[in-house]
Amino acid sequence: MAQLWGGRFTKETDELVYRFNASISFDRRLLQQDVEGSIAHVVMLAKQGILTIEEKDQIIRGLTQIREDAACGRLAISEEYEDVHSFVEANLIARIGEAGKKLHTGRSRNDQVALDMRLYVRQEVLDTDGLLKALLQTLLSLMEENLDTYMPGFTHLQKAQPVTLAHHLGAYFEMFKRDRQRMRDIFGRMNFCPLGSGALAGTTYPLDRDYTASLLGFEGPTLNSMDSVSDRDYVIEFLSALSMIMMHLSRFSEEVILWNSNEYRFVEIDDAYSTGSSIMPQKKNPDIAELVRGKTGRVYGALTSLLVTMKGLPLAYNKDMQEDKELTFDAIDTVKSCLVLFDGMLKTMKFHKDVMEKSAMYGFTNATDAADYLVNKGVPFRDAHGIIGRLVLYCLEKGKSIEELSLAELTAISPVFEADLYDAVSLKTCVEKRLTIGAPGQEAMRAVIERHRSYLEEEWNRTDTGEEKKDE
Ligand code: ARG
Image 1 (cartoon, rainbow, N blue to C red):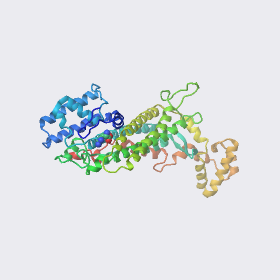
Image 2 (image 1 turned 135 degrees about the vertical axis):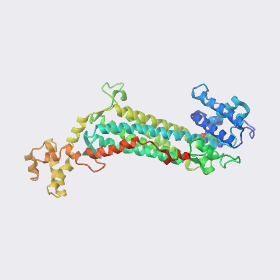
Image 3 (image 1 turned 120 degrees about the vertical axis):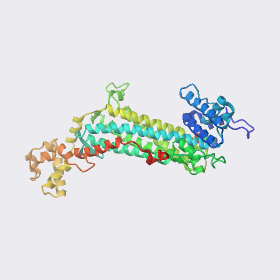
């Protein structure tokens, strides 16, 4: 073991304690961020006259080599160090000697790790946003292609009223759009630099925290050093937003699984996104959708876990916070792979439009419209509801849909029915008459799709979240 302290100690750390305490097996993931933060730190130290230009240049050269060597695998991250911070510092000293020992001037691992994690999460917020955008693009194309693909809309998983596939998918568009908005909110709130907070109480060196913050693309420095080293709110917010994404993906997966079942047959998942059974030759299973649904629990677990870890911590830094990393990394990896796979599954899925339409026809999804038809002919709604109820019962006995009844059968139930009933309750009419904004009628949907198109063309203007403010 190689550690950063020793002076005060008379005994070696117990081997088990050392391993229990160490975080390098997972925080090695932060190496790039650690180096980036250190470079900004020394540039600032030199500007402030705390390091000489020569020392700064030497350190930057060493750090840049470390970054490159680690990126291409030339530099193996050795687990004999406690964490990535000690590893980088020791490696720097080994490379450049004395000057390397000055890197940690005016800094603590507490503000260092707070910065590394923030840089990491900030990038992941952007990456997640990009994956959500790709999924929205897939959804929008499918919506445009399915404006007149009729299908039943459900409540209580019972057929309710006819909608279109475009409209159904449009519901998910809204969800994932809100998920993207959450990414922006998080970005805006977290984009402040904790470096320079020291262990908890700032430092006595004349650091220029504004300068470090701007070098690292932050809106500015954080304003309380104790909060800076102990704040993990932004990680919790991100995990919460990731949980919401998973909740949406999981609901969608559940529908895909149902729709892909032999009973529904609304869709067929592509062979490339299905798996077979080792024993039942007829099977083609929706494993990807099931796994996405299943992995949701693990992301919720990360959120709950960090909330619980943080709830009893006194100010400021406590080692408990080291527990934020593995679960955050795992949640991020999980959500990213789920987004990619779900998008691929959706793009290659076949929609059985005929089956969907038939299902909408044989589920009395037009019963409300039939009642409205009577209302238009002067029947009070409550009476119309009763008449259509009896009509449905009759249809069930005969095994027919409303539009399959003869006019004689219809008028036997109510003399108000006339031949124009057939057109009034056709799937097309039922859907196309629903034209308020947000409804499935084609015209209404086209207007919404138009808005979605321009929304997807908008670039993320980070001035509203801080990113480019410094250029003003
Ligand atoms: N591995 C630690 C963490 O993840 C780094 C900070 C260590 N600070 C300390 N005072 N031991 O939180």
